[in-house]
Length: 366
Ligand code: GLY
Image (cartoon, rainbow, N blue to C red; front, side):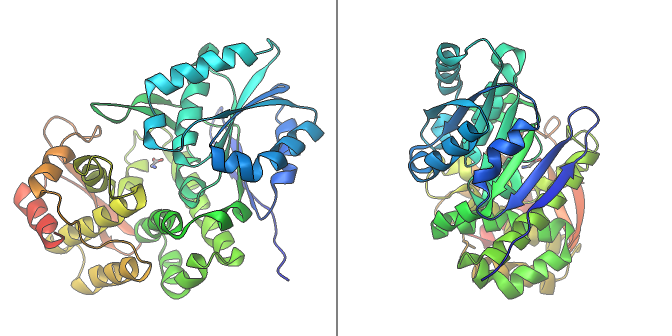
């Protein structure tokens, strides 16, 4: 039998520091942790149908045991839930439940639910506290940490939102064991990203141990979730609002990845798959600009292939991807800006990359 520690990581920010708790089968303790925050007696839990059926009872028991009242709100776990319309309908529902004591929100699901719940928390009554209880690998290692909340518009993803930090991130890695393989691969794509941009040891670990991760072995999941959460926390601490060019490195693979998702009309590729393709294109551009050698680029491609993520873009037109990449909300004017790499663990942000080079890198992947 394996035994697991609970890890407590602190994310230090001037006025809104919080803890990230990581452990296996720890949901039973959630109520106790929330109680310590003194954020009110009434919980509004935004979740999806699968998570509610599978784990809602446990969460309910844990919160009630600690003296909270709670109401579940089920929303579909698809990108469509990240809309102004769904946010408005959730807020109207909250007003019926709000007992005019103090209410807080619990985001109990993957990235979509975390982003929506955080957005609603940021605007309801000019802001109420919220807790992230991420249930996918992708949400545990990335979207639940750092306070980026948003909904989409037809003009683009995440166009309306705020930086609004949660009061606690509570990652139960036991829940990851009910993920399907594609969801695990999608989250693993973000973990590989952390290895490439910041952590050679993590990259080496995944190279050797990816099978254990895909087989959902708890020690492997515990290692990658803790390591990735720590990297994300340290980056957010230094540049909470992405103003200093530090948090920017988390966008490695994302500018092209988002453009691929948009060009494919959010069908076919999930987020992690599109990011894997974006990382390959960024790595090919880095090779072309002599920032890395072909051996490093090959190592990245071999790992992405080994974990079963895509290496070919398929039928989407390069022209459409290039058009979409100009919609990146972080670009200034018509200048593009990509996070590239100088080696495993080292990044370099380059502006105004000639389209010819981007097109050539995309072509290699079609
Ligand atoms: N997912 C990128 C960030 O939080 O900055």
